[in-house]
Length: 372
Image (cartoon, rainbow, N blue to C red; front, side, top):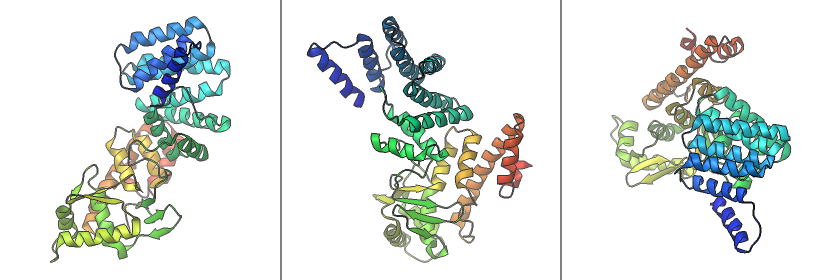
């Protein structure tokens, strides 16, 4: 939408007889078509835009064109050509000593690395981009792919790269998470729930409520929903699990627990017909974030990095007499162990003694089998 408005402004200048650089106009037209989902003839169109820009011979716009078109090619499936163009644009930005070109180029470069599974270089490019943006207070570029940028911001928040600057970017562009649950708990959620060590609820106003057996039914309701991500769960199913073997009206009982949960946390659980689901736009839950990562195509090292930040003990370890909680606890612990084992095996293969030692010190007490 922003790109289309910008294009409409350029076309209005044309109508008024105001001179506008044709190469710039063609580049913006190409970007707008790409942003709207038009991939028809993208390779020859990219070549045409590059030719016009290079004919003009303005180094800054030559670099801009390479960075923008490189991303469009990469996202359209021409990954090698796209990556090469982005790298050319970054190299030109270095020659020009232009922080804006380096900033956006490294943002897109980070996206390329993450998409192709190169977490180490992705983190390096993202960290560098965030430092540049923070140092020069950069916020805008000719193209701003919100979905890609939002995912990069989420990852940067998780990594702790220039958090104050990231919050500035979020505010300037009114960026909201594209995918939920998010990796990071640093987005503006009304409520955050932590279940991996020191179980607690943290409200946006700073209030902290510790979770204990006193709230077991509310916790079990939440855990039942966490255990079934991406789907609403029937009240009947929830009641049958929580109140198995008890002589109560399961649906009425679940509704009572839901009322109590909402009184404490707000409307973080929504009801549609006779089913419940977590509204991840209102709440961040560490266990749900971990599951989302585990279900995706994410390298073990990236999952371990998340675990290092958020996984301080097994899920609700102090609640030992709930089958519902124990089932999810074992499942998530198994997923965590596999990720740690994978990260450790990779460190051994690469002969990265520093990482191997860090993993042993961090995880051996919780996951001894990952190192056997």
